[in-house]
Amino acid sequence: LKSGFFWLPSAPVGMGVATVTALFLLLVIMPFTNERLPKVWERHPLLIVILGGVFNALAAVFFQSAVKGGRIVEVIPINRLSVLLIIFFSWLFFRKQEAVTFRVVLGGLLSVAGAFAIVSGR
Image 1 (cartoon, rainbow, N blue to C red):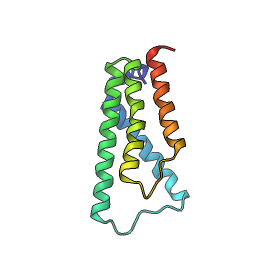
Image 2: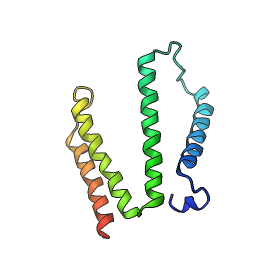
Image 3: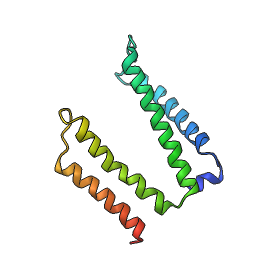
């Protein structure tokens, strides 16, 4: 990713190219699946999906900007800490829908341990 900035120095343009490419590929694949667009678009779920997409796009732009301007050994561990945040918020908000098991917590801790190993240079 860092060497990709040699050809395309702008993080938002890079995310735009990646997103449009993904959208095109998904639209090409969609007729071959059983999935169809819903006939009735309800406002509330659609608003939540759009808001989630905007936050996800902003996170990707911020991540690419951090990789471009910062050192990889500092950016990647911070990014890996998001795994623990996801596990915590899943436990906090979705206790009934999805159980946070010992394996999930262990996987999150291993991800953070890997990030620590990157930072410490081992």
